[in-house]
Amino acid sequence: MLKKSPKLTSTLLLLASLSVVAAGCGGSTEGTNGEGTASPSPSEAASAAATASAKPPEQKQKQLRMMVGVIGGKTAEEHELFQKEVERLTGIKVTMEKPSGNMNDKLLPAISSGEKYDLIQVDKPLMEILYDQGVLMPLDDRIKGSSVISDAAVFPAAEWDQVKMKDGKVYGIFTKFQGGTMPTVRQDWMDKLNLKDPKSLDDYYNVLKAFKEKDPDGNGKDDTYGLSTAGLYEIQGFMSGAGVKAGYVMKDGKRTIPYATEAAVPVYEWFAKLYKEGILDPNFATNDSGKMRDLFLTDRVGMVTYWDAWVGMFNNTRQQQDPNTSFRAKGLLPAEGPDGKIIMRRGDPNVWIIPVNSPDPATAMEFIEFWSTEKGNILGTLGIAEHDFTVKDGKYELTQTGKDHSMDHGSPFIYNTKWQNPFGLLPGVKEAQELVKKHATLETTGANWKEVEKILNNYALQAMQGKLPAADAVKKMNDELKAAKLID
Image (cartoon, rainbow, N blue to C red):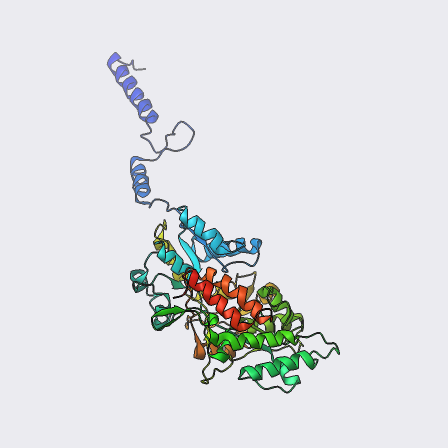
């Protein structure tokens, strides 16, 4: 056996120690990291570092805070579902505050205190108030920069004049197509009594008298009225018979309110006659619109004055209750004036506005674009997928909830001609809307209209009930309006 030399022994010991050090430093792919797992090679570590640096940072979800009036769910629970559906469809987390009472009472104090909203649903009168307060962001450039909003097939070019303010700029983008108001009649009662569509105030009187006296519901009882309203809302269809338009009308450079002029006296006297003869619902002066609608739906009254959309909703409601019902609501033209002309009210535009202090106007515009195209149109009309409707093999079907909601989640009618409601319009709506498109015009009110309404309501309702001569009522209106500097 050969004897090892001291020099050889030292060399072997040095190599062994280097081997141990190399293993401890992870130089081998078979080494460990001290936890029993394989350590990456230098090339693998470099590759992982490069991948990590190339990965984009996680983006924060877009969020919007809104205040809405009628857009959303019908109940608090459904409103939560509605907000989640918006998030599913857009990726934007939305908070849609929906005041239960008068929206102005909630919104105006909030704006005054500096609260920030990205988007607010308002009508034109409220938009005018906010414009005067310097709250609104002009949207002309954003509209021009949007291939969606600037598309005339989505919003007709002629409609934008409705939402221009005094400076000629646009401050709102439409939430829906706004219709108009009109006398709405029980056409099945008209047919039963062989009555023709009325044209003059005298014709209207004869129809309403027949509804009162000829037992149109066939129950053998004297329990029907010819007409109901919700106070002065909405008597334009009858004021038309005297050529009188609601709101402000400029005459010789001065502000006038035709409802408070002598021209309106014959119409107030016409109402007083209806009231005295029991043709007019005795509670009309204190009715809200809900009570008025209920009378119409429960066979108590033959005519109301309301929106074109409700022609369809009345029909749908009764058909849901009884598919074999004979009930049929129909919209009528207002009474012709002395010159043969018709005055019909078109509803104030309903729009999205972006406040100047919006935290995220770009995302607000992104939402408006969504709302104005097919997915948003479906949500605003049909409602929430799998809740209000289902789709199978491209065929839409309303759930019972969807039927009860009458395809209205804040935007029952739209401008966008690129999407057609798969269910069409509710019965009677198309014909009613044609009347609106042909005859209706906007009213002019303004920031102080609430003060005007108090004065008009006080004296006009007394005149319509025969408690005050119509001429005296008009004079008192005029005196108080002038004293308050609400007319010139």
